[in-house]
Length: 175
Picture (cartoon, rainbow, N blue to C red):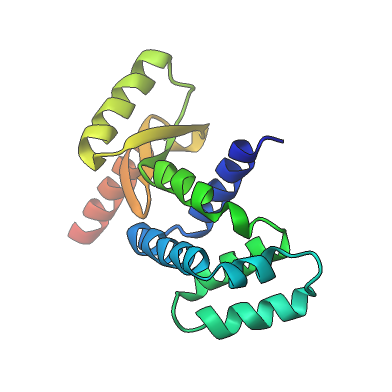
């Protein structure tokens, strides 16, 4: 597997793990860790050496970074050390930065939607979020009609099912 491809997969995995976290903060912490490794070549050498036991690497890394980065970034960097990819950190950061500019939107409809409607949804959500939108489309006949869109922790529920539930609640509250 090419190094760029591996870095892209690792960056995507970090992105997936960091949902709900401040992605810019994560990127800054990764940059600081990368700078520390560049400015301390002996540390980088020890962390990438096959001669140094994994336990020693973790101890050395812990002394340097524990408490200086978030638990998510700390765990991620430990994982990179364990799988022998810490030397690829600058490339992973670059890929993470690219992934960070994308956002996934889950679209649920009662029937499959055509490419034209997908393009319109992508355009509208891109304008709304300021990011490149990747759609994950699902079909759920229970929503009867309309559309449900989830972007991050936001839900836009324009389904017929939601409208009927709202109508039921409105009628029930008047009785």
